[in-house]
Length: 552
Image 1: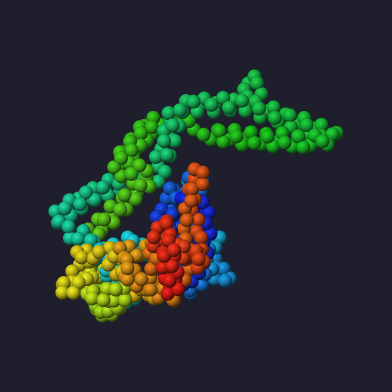
Image 2: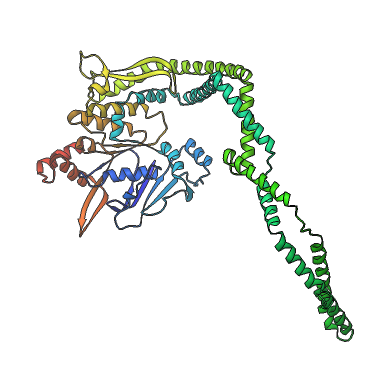
């Protein structure tokens, strides 16, 4: 159940803390007061897309927090699966910050989460029915989902859809294997040519880098030889000059002699002797380096680099990519050359998967047909209560080839007037009829999803008079076992609520502010009178409002 909703800097709502309770709660207010903003805030906290335009003008960020209590075992298990910490009292606090610049932040019980995770949790917490959902009834594709939910077919549908996806994959693979034989022969020739060319080149990872290093060494062999000669001359000296090695050795010897009289000289003497050994190692390494390069080697390296460059243009700009291309060519050639064996294996798998998909589709279809009668009878019963007693409401079920939803096409046919044949809803249903049909369907499905909070956003669209009172009674009935929130413009519905919140907009200076006020009996009477007669409230309207509340 949604216990508290806190809104900060969302559009015209600077700050609002809304306390909610169980039962039937209505929200009323003048057009433009901010009722839709509250729905937008709830959508945001459930992970739906939150536009930066929601942030109040002049504010850097907005935030919405929602506190839910009395979570059921399935919801708690979902929190565990998403690594969201539990609270001792089994409550859930969802917070979402929306920034004018930068990314939005989401948290559940203090732990950071993604908007996608909120969208996964949201359907377990709140079911929102807005005006657009009524118009979804005009799309037959939606109708079958109601029967599936009524019959509890979600798991069976998932199994079928997994089988159907695999069936389509196998079909595509078989079509590729059964390609034109001429095209297959051309493909084999091309693959063999590419394989032969790459295998003949005998490419090795890192080869171009090593060849480039060798090429640079050959091209600069004279510089290298000159450097080696000069360094070794400095180390060894010549007939007229002692080298570094000789000087360091003599220096070490002198200090070693003096250290006999002054021990502090032992360390410097040792370091000089170590330097002598290091210089000898350097000379030994330099003497082993040859600078006699074969000019033909340079030509061979250049040819090899040119070959690798040309191969790189065709098969990938690195040795690794060329080798990957070679492996892929071999795999494709193997598949084509052994396509007959592969085709037999895949055809057997395809037939087995086809039998499985057909069996699951038939089971879906049979269970849908069995459930359709009970579903339509319950919907008609609800519609009769909603002042549509003579309505004909029945499902038209057609058998079709396999597709993602099985082997059925289902649409609801309606006749609102006696003597008229049932026709698709898009042909005859008015806005008020659509609202009541959707409310009837929601009522029938209310106990199927385990959601404790239902929100109806202007479900009274196109409804007035006695039907409006029946809509209110139905909402109150649904609220006996769960929390129902309803945004309404009708006094007949508002009078039946257990709790009444008024949304008020005011202008202060150059800014607009919206606040949410809980109403007592007198406040409800004033608000119902305003809904009935507008801003100029008369004693008669107040009397009518009081009678409506007392009757409720």
